[in-house]
Amino acid sequence: MSEDRRDERRNPRGRQRGAARSRGQGHRSAQAPSERRRRTDPARTAAYDVLREVDTSDAYANLVLPPLLRERGLSGRDAGFATELAYGTLRLRGRYDAILARCVSRPLDRLDTEVLDVLRLGAHQLLGMRVPAHAAVSETVALCRDRVGAGPAQMVNAVLRAVGRRPLDEWLDELRADAPDAVTALAQVGSHPVWVTRALREALHGSGRDVGEIGDLLDADNTPPRVTLVARPGLVDADALADGAGHDVRLEAGRWAPTARVLGAGTDPADVPAVADGRAGVQDEGSQLVTLALAAAPLEGPDARWLDLCAGPGGKAALLAALAAQRDARLVANEVQPHRARLVRRGLRAVPEGVVEQVRTGDGREMGSEEPGAYDRVLVDAPCTGLGALRRRPESRWRRTPADLGVLTRLQGELLDSAVDAVRPGGVVAYVTCSPHLAETRLVVDDVLRRRDDVTRLDARAAVRDVLVPGAQIDLGPDDGGAGGLDVQLWPHVHGTDAMHLTLLRRTG
Image (cartoon, rainbow, N blue to C red; front, side, top):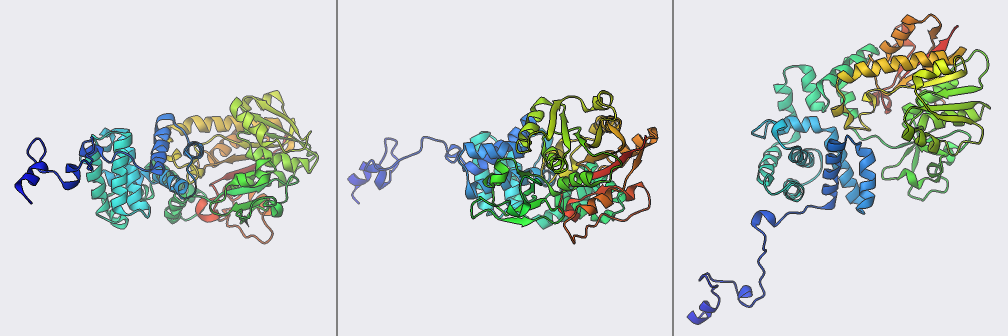
């Protein structure tokens, strides 16, 4: 090449340009190198935005994510990726924080929460999903630049590379080895707060189960549940639940409840016409069982008027109303919060006219004094910590504290007292919680029974067995011959349901 041609390819600073740029065909980005890869894909962005909404607004991921996916037009594999990334990160946050703490040079609570959420998402891709390490790191760094800024991106890159240098098994072995005690090791590896892990272990023992099951229970809490539908009796036959749905809708019979059908993977409940019009609904099989058991419990006297004392959001009320319709009974549904009362009304839309006497908005603690002895069956689905539904609402485990128990157990006792006052002598009360915590279950009931001489415990186990699918053999734990041998405690790792508790009581005077 001649010296003249070389001069033509030099820029004004004397640096030689490439052939393309000398012809005016080249392009140089106006961005600095750290700015050139600022955006990540929409699925990761959606997952990040869900985590931020959960953190800043105390929102529930299962209420935030579906509308967000629709709004952004994400479906198929992208929607599935965003769902697993968001829910998986929330479930395993404790495990990932324990690992990240070993890779970050400062305490995690000194990091901006936005940066910490980015790191958690990256850790889940590296250790909990089948994402190649280079993609997990580069895409998460891009997410950081896009949503947080370029400043922390270098730190995010270094931390995630450190996380990715070791497989998950090695990290878990290190967590176990470094833990100060066995419960802390279980909590970190199983991604539950220490106090929750300890409470679940005590609940297993209190139910007569082997405390060695705690690892399986924590694992079950970290496994996404399949979607279960309830076919409301008299409104739709369970075997006909898929009628009118598309060919892609697949349903399997439930393990325990004759009303239960389990959706195949990837099937949207909205694709089932009976769900859309209220003849069926989405309801955990354990929730169905305890409701069916109340309706099956033996009564002394009439069976004409039922009460759901804490009815929102309405799943149990709708099943009760369908059962009441078959017996010419009527249902009153009470809910203290107006917006949840509206959800109850919507859930009852398919029930025949005249069955639902009223959906009222009021304090359930006052029902016993307002209508003493007015009901034959009463359901108290008491507000609780929700420790029995952690697989369904993974963020709940990080929000609840032991301090919540005092407020909740006092409320639970007051509601149960009101329910006993509201039921007539010979009538039945079902005390239900979606928590196995002994303070919210047996101890609440024992305290009420200790203060009253007009109520006795019934055999809830017999009532549950009476409503099972024919031939089903359910493990309800050992019968210790005491009060605990009459109650029912379901478990995710044993029954595949939420950890629902059921006590049945009869008013005696």
